[in-house]
Structures are given as structure tokens and as C-alpha cells.
Length: 211
Image (tube, rainbow, N blue to C red; front, side, top):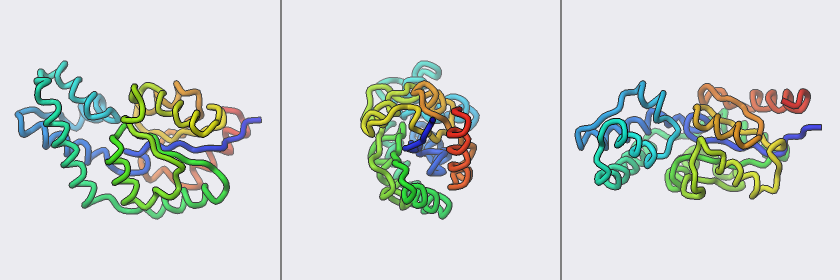
């Protein structure tokens, strides 16, 4: 019988409404050097990827000089912190969901393609850090999503098998990583979908049907 013991959460677009923040921060940094990406490009191509991967793609597709990668990356992280510090706040539906899930014995971790300092800032400001056993960033793995390494690392650290874990993901790279990990998936449309009832209903579905 299938039994879910842990829930692994992506951050951007799942727990934090940060997609637009990352887009604005990257475009602001790129704009200082005469480059830009459209919102459509961000949503279809760049969403969910680490900044370093985004910059490599921009070099391949738009001729961004590799010599600018480090400075643009630094500026992007600075601007992300500025935006998150102003806009990132607790959400009642998330605090309730994670608090209740933890009280019921579910183990939880946050697994994000963002850098560690950004995760700590956003999860801290959202008042969710106390619900997680640990948080993994793109600095904790050698391959970022869509590779499943970050989720495999989390499951190994918890001592759990994939069929004991539910992954909450929203974008194509994260969803691909979740599926490749062998765990069960809760596909998130917006941060408003991440509620106690929705997560519990998905767990009940998994435990009753095995899929």
C-alpha cells in the first residue's frame, strides 16, 4: 500500500509568488548592458532555471558575452533581494497548510533552483522556515532542474523512497525533475493552489489509487 510520508516543495511559483520578481531583476541587470528578454521568453524558456543557466542560454541565443556573466549574475541577485525584501510576505493559506501538515507528521523540505541566500530570505520572510527539515538550493547539487538530482538528494537525506514522497511543482523544468525522480507529483498552477485541502486530496488520491 502506498503511503506518503514527505512533501517536497519547489519555491518560486509554489510557495513564493516570485516569477515576476526574477524576471524583473534579470531584465534590469541585462538592460544595463543592452540586452533583454520578453515575458513570453521568460515563461516559455527561462522560468525555473538557475540564473547561470539562463545566462548561458542568452549567450547561445542572443550573443551575450560570457565575460558579462558574473557581473550580471551579481546584479541580478542584488535586485532580487531588493524586490523580495519589499514584496515577500507571509501567506495565510501557506502557513496554515504547512503547519497542519507538519502537525499530522508529514516531513517537509524545500528544493529550489535558486541560490541558498535567496531561498533563506524568501522562505524566512514568508514565515515558513520552521516547517522544513532542510532546504536545498542549486548550490547543493551538481545538476539543476530539470535534472532530478535535487529531489533525489532530498529523498536520500530523509531516508525515503520516491513512492513515499509527494513533490509540489509548477513549471516544466521542475515538473520534469519531479517525474524523473520517481516521486508523485502535485502540479501547481499558482501559489493559491497550495492549500491544505488540495495537498491532502492529492495524497488521498495517491494512497487510494497508487498514482
